Figure 1 (cartoon, one colour):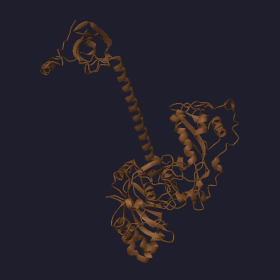
Figure 2 (figure 1 turned 90 degrees about the vertical axis):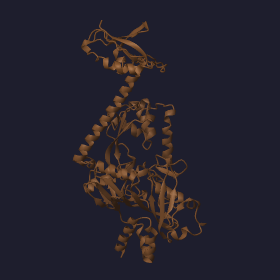
Figure 3 (figure 1 turned 180 degrees about the vertical axis):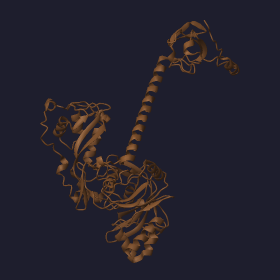
Figure 4 (figure 1 turned 90 degrees about the horizontal axis):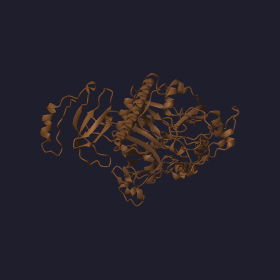
Length: 578
């Protein structure tokens, strides 16, 4: 038996380093698979178990068995021949260590887990590349998508014809174990149980694109498919002004009531779809957010690279943003800020201020309701800073136009800070309690209640809906009871009778039933290498005109220190007025 011995000193030997350096030169190359025959090799090997990982390394002799196809190796302890044993060579690692079965199993599990992650990432990258290629050829809003429905204008509103639409969603954890009928009846209670039963029987509700029975139990990785008769609320018929257009970006003056992208109830009545259908700009990528009820400047990129570049600038705080808001009350100006502050409320007194009349609101913002999109100032919230300055005051309506410069980008930041100051936006249905109590509008389920808008127009819900959803979120801790009866299981649908649609009974043309905007307008965005601005909104122009007639110099002085872009905007408006 031929034996290649590699004398490696124990790690406790002080001369091991020198010995190893000499021996490395004498070590022959490992034998090829075909030449292995009783090949023995002395190496450092780890022979500890999982419970004793501090056990020192020990030298052993590995004897590879005869045969090219053999995977067996005899492990010999030179100090005790009786402790020799046979293992599969897969347990021997490249560094010479020997793994136990438990260690090897764990290693394989980790390997398979990482392989799944890598494969998933690879599929995502491949799908993303295919999507980008398709977008380059057809745009990300295709003619096929736009052909789903049609639109028309009536009473200065843009209406979408109802159409069939299929929602697809992965099953949520709280649905696991529930029957498909029970889940829809409890989670989406806007329709009756009979409606969902008919939809399941008719194939309008499927699981994994397959017909299922009402008692089908929802499982992990299930895809729930639901086809609905979709109605979209109307939006303003005001035209969308294109401020700037080139190969990289599209800058528009977004009217209020229009969401930027499809969300909640809105799809074809979103800004991106309107630009695609009416302006032929069908390859757009989001850069920043602008609430559905907010009007003003919006940047959209025409390439993914441009979108990333602009978004990174905004997120890094390299972009200056200016907004105008119309608030309730007389906001303090530079002429009163240095006088006696006895008339100021406690919040104003807490704010730092500059000599030009700018108040610095440095108050953290806490998420109050993720579903309803409501935030508030509170301890433990995210740091949020807004600079606010008086633009003009209208004594007849007791309202002020204020210039707002957000230094951070929290959801509803300006609206929340204005409410905290005691100067809420005059027609804000979320943060002006007096207006909220006097204004009622349809919620997403067609019921009359107080209106709540998710960020970016994600949806409308009332307090009762929120409680229902909170209960559903806790359903994992509740015992799931299958309520599907034998009559429901055996129900035979005729396939002909119409299925009731709640939205078909809503008078969508009644503009008094919907909130079409708030007095908040994005006026300008600028960085070191680009700058865009819009016109003043109509609700701010009368205040400016009144100020212009009495004292243009005073008006210009009110905003001179805050932003040069606003000054140039006012000069343009002055030229139009004169």
